[in-house]
Image (cartoon, rainbow, N blue to C red; front, top):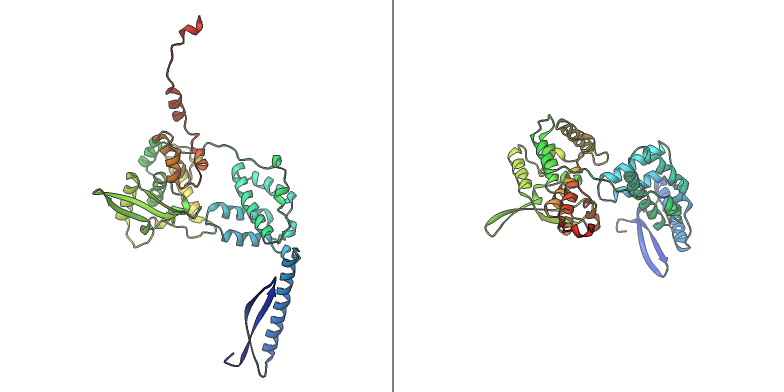
Length: 368
């Protein structure tokens, strides 16, 4: 180098390709110090390690050192690459609780361990939630296979008939009458929590989308001389960009937030903004407050949580649009209409209306 130092780099020729990997290690060319000698020794170790990695990769071998790595640490880094949502964080929490404060090498990932973890989850969460957590673990195991850390995914060895199956459940969704009851019920919880929840009930936004919703995501346009309000944002869960109109009720909530705002904030609901994405503390506080509110209104507070807002939006839309799955699917930002079909099995009122729509025939002759 121009300053008289030497920069170490790896000159690699592998599978008919040549490239360089700079190590950011510099030593004095003349009169090397003890520190320079240590740096040179370190560069030699890096070279040997890199050669080993290429040999393993070239021959389809499994690197034993990587298999001894801690699975919880790997899963934590895997989760960090995913869209921020409660499911991944909750899976990581349950994994830590199950393993405890000890190292868990990847070599111990077996089919039996997966079944043990499944049984552990079923004692603490619902069957469908346990299945979601196991799918997250399964994704991490597939990543380990892709990285050639393990030869195969141990979960794939579990017979299909022995795996958890998704159960049909009736999702909690409030009727418009019940929403009015909530609105009329006084409760000493943060008003912004109530506003954010009602915004979810009239937009279908998830927690991950509302707690990061900014004023810049709200767009006002004049169409045919009439002011229209839209929302434009990227869904955290699916990482897709959504653009749809706001209902009159949602617009009222936005206007109320504008008049309530005392301090400058880029967020529409600053008190709902998650301050601890790792542990979702704000999310927990909001859900606790919502349960308190539902109980005060005489509703089943055990079923109240922030995500019921999305279920409420979808279910009420389906009823009001006579089951228009395609439109509701687009408004919810679903990639597949099959995802929206879970809301098709809704209230008895809708089923009853469908049955009563059948005409009555004259069947007196069949008795003769």
